Structures are given as structure tokens and as C-alpha cells.
Image (cartoon, rainbow, N blue to C red; front, side, top):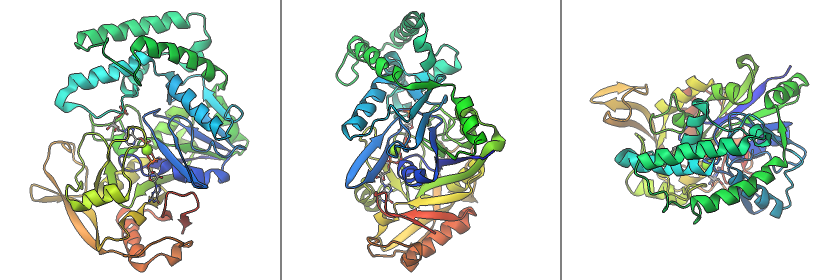
Length: 430
Ligand code: GDP
Ligand code: IMO
Ligand code: MG
């Protein structure tokens, strides 16, 4: 029996997970998503084309590979249909190699309304959700009132749908939310519901599987499986910067519950980190830069959300957070992305500890959201040259290699590869 490899983000998302999955897919037979849903935006670039995936695994462009949407994932049928149609327009027929777990939960239009209603009710404490319905749909899953993909085939589906929707309408009314004014993509709840129901028919055309049996059978047959994480460590519902997190377990442990594999079946754990750090939405971010450097990282890195288009907050790489991520996830190797964004920087800084009221700590404190945390920075000489055309790790500028070596030393985890452009071809394995 072979083991399942895991690839996940170590920061606050958007580390370049989609790109690295796409690059690694030729080494695998199956790529499987295990949590999250359309809140994710995974960007792939090759042959001068850019593709953004939300629910569909990033192995989909390799047509001989199976892509699986696991039980831990949330599916919004209309967004799913849009992705399928976009792929079809690019000549990718996903109906052949995309399987969907019967146990994956559905995001209803009224879940999306509740996301907006909850955010509005939170006022200053709002999370900055992507408003795709993630929190409310996982809430219903845990409350045991959710609806799963497999349930769409049952005769009482519509009845259950209406019941759940009514519940949401009552909740929204209690919160004083203006349901009549609510819009999704310019459509009222009723209008969107119609499109959503039609989209369900597209979803039903895909192979619905008991994915836990499917995955375990693959492992038994020594097929190679890669679990693709969405969001990231610091957005994890248990260990992230709660309450400014997403509503799923984004960590390695989430692979066990989100796909139905035993902890002993976990193999390599590949952690993705940018050479700096970004965050989109509200919540603590100790190394955030509010100055010209932060602005440069945002502009040079094109740091605008792949799902919402919002500008991402930018700052230096955060070693205490990375170490925490390596510990919680059992990271066996690091992939570092986007050092090229800092090509022109004279100095590149790294936060190696936090100064909390004069005391140094390398730990993430419980009071992360409220304590005054000052990052303790170590400066590194910038490499000040383009990385374009470099095709081997060894040929990277010495100053960049020093910086990367410092990341390895600080985290105690080896770097497997570095990505130096958005393109599929620019990943240098060490
Ligand atoms: P994901 O959510 O982790 O898959 O990451 P996103 O796709 O949301 O954001 C990563 C962004 O960085 C995308 O626009 C990628 O095309 C881009 N990207 C990925 N790797 C690199 C890299 O090494 N250099 C540069 N400049 N851009 C990269
Ligand atoms: P990928 O997979 C970055 C953030 C949102 C918000 C919080 C909760 O592309 O890395 P949610 O919609 O889940 O209720 O939002 O989490 N967030 C992400 N930030 N990348 C993502 O996904 C994210 N998915 C959610 O901005 O702060
Ligand atoms: Mg993203």
C-alpha cells in the first residue's frame, strides 16, 4: 500500500499551491481536494495562458490523471458549472476524469445569503469572507442539517432544500438582513436559485463516488495520490488566527477527515510558502508593511485576490508562523514561491521572532489578535538581478541562496524547490 502525499499552504493562502500541484501532477495518478470550496482561487499558467480554479483540483489540465473532489469539500453547483464550462471552452473535457464524492456538502444560494448576513451583523469584527457561503454551509454540516451531493438523487431532495432555505430566511430576518435587496452576481435570491437548480443538472452528469473507498483502493493498488490543500495553515479553524479564519481544517489532519484516509497513510507533506507573506481579509498579520515596500510587494507581486480581486495585504516572511505551520502539519519539504517579486530590493527582511511588550517569543500566542506584536527582523542582502532564464537551483544568485538557506535553517525543513515565475516551467528543484 502506498501513501498519500499532501500539498498545502503554510501562510494565509495564495502561496501558489495551484501552480505547484500542476507542476507535480505528472508524478501522480490522482489529485484530490479535501477541504474548502469556491473560496479558493488556484492560478495555473502555461503556454501563455492563465487559468483560475476554485472547486476543481489543479490536476485537471492533465487529461490522463484522475481529479477527485473529496467529501470534505463544499460544492456550489453554479460556480462548479461555470468552471466546467470555462474548461470546456479551453478544450478540456472534465467529464471523463473528474469524480465527485457523494458525501461532499452543497452550498445553497441561501448559504451565500447567510454569509452576507453574518458579515453584516459582525460589523467591525467582520472576517472579510469571500462570501461564497463557506461558513454557513460548514455550519449546517456540523449541525447535521446540510445537504450532500448524493442527496440530490433522492426523492425528498427538494423538500429538504426548501426546509433548509426557510431556516436561513428566518435567520436572516432575525439579523435584520434585507433579503429583497440581496444579490448574487446581480441576481435576486429567487433568480439565482433558478440558475443554481439548472446547474445541479451539470453536477449530476459527473461520476459520484464513495470517495473514501475510491481513494483507499487507489492506495492499495499503489497508485500515487496527491491531496491538494486550499486556504492555508493560518486560516485553519482550530489553529489559525481565530475567528479570522475559514471554517475548515486546512491542515494535514484535514486530509484524513476530508478524504477518509488513515493518519498512518499520510506520506510526504509539501508546504508552500511565498518568499514574503500576504493575507487577504481581516485579522492579525504581524509582519504587514504599511509603507512603500508593502505597496511594492503588492504591485510587483500582482497581489490581488484570484477569487475576489481584493488587494492582498503584504509583508515580510514570518518565521514563527512558518515554524508553527511545519509543526502542526508535519511538513517534510518546503516549496518557496515568488522570490522574483523582490528582485529589485536592496534588502530583504525576515521576521525571526516576535517582540511582545519587550519580551521575545518564537511562539504564536493565544492572544495573537490583541497583543501588540512587533516583528524582530533580520536583514538579508538583496540579489538585485532578474531571475529570468535561470533553469537550475544552483544557478540562482548567491544572495538569494543565502536567504533560502536561512529559511531552511530557521524552520529546520529542507527546501525541495523554488518557483521563480507564474509559469509552469519555472520551478527549480534543488
Ligand atoms: P494559490 O491559491 O495558493 O493557488 O495561489 P493563487 O493562485 O491565489 O496566487 C498565487 C499567484 O502568484 C498567482 O497569480 C500565480 O500565478 C502567481 N505565482 C505563483 N508562483 C509564482 C512565482 O514563483 N513568481 C511569481 N511572480 N508569481 C507566481
Ligand atoms: P486559496 O486556496 C486567501 C480568507 C478570506 C477571509 C477568510 C474567511 O486561494 O489560498 P471564507 O470565504 O472562507 O469564509 O473567508 O479566509 N480566505 C482566503 N484567503 N486564499 C484563500 O484560498 C482563501 N480562502 C478564504 O479572505 O479572510
Ligand atoms: Mg488563491
